[in-house]
Image (spheres, rainbow, N blue to C red):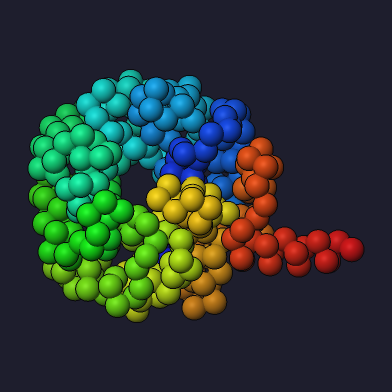
Length: 303
């Protein structure tokens, strides 16, 4: 079993997309450069969504050509065929598509059924493969435990969507515990439903709304999973629980992994500093526990 835990950093996209305060493109680029300098290899940097719906990411086409040419793996969410066209125009080689295990959630977010969303993605993946033969595709599955509109989700529903995404040729699925309510026993039931899927094709995306994200990571690690999404400083609040924590903080994930004997390739001190300019622009204090601890120790040492 591998002792390397692969982190997919989603702060620049998922962490910022719901923020009302505009973040300048150069500030986003500096954030990405700092994340790379901290050792993060996989970074989801933006989404080619309509600026009308997500103004914060309206600079995707401007940002992409300026990304560091340093060997990092940069990806972008593409919500529809038009988004894919825009991504291809600027040379994107790694894309992500988004659906959910809840019919109600897909209807609210995409205004279609799960099957309709999958049909659209099949066509998009085929187009992408034709134009980017060596490209990489991730499929997001949200609401794997509970939906804010439909309540509890059966693990079999998650399995069905995962199987459909893999059948259309995605390289990896990311399972999103969207509202941050799950405990390890519930995550283990989802893992049991997808036990037939190779673990190197499965990433887990936890929210920390109720403080259970790391416990859920621990449950997955115990079962042999080694790919997790996270957001520096925990950027990205949960839209269904105002004022609550959102994404699992990369800082907390790195601390947990390293103390558990798993390597991440990430410098915790550099990571803690990477998000500080963004937090300042947003007028927000640090909330990630490991980040606060690292910065507190550094401040004490300077004094």
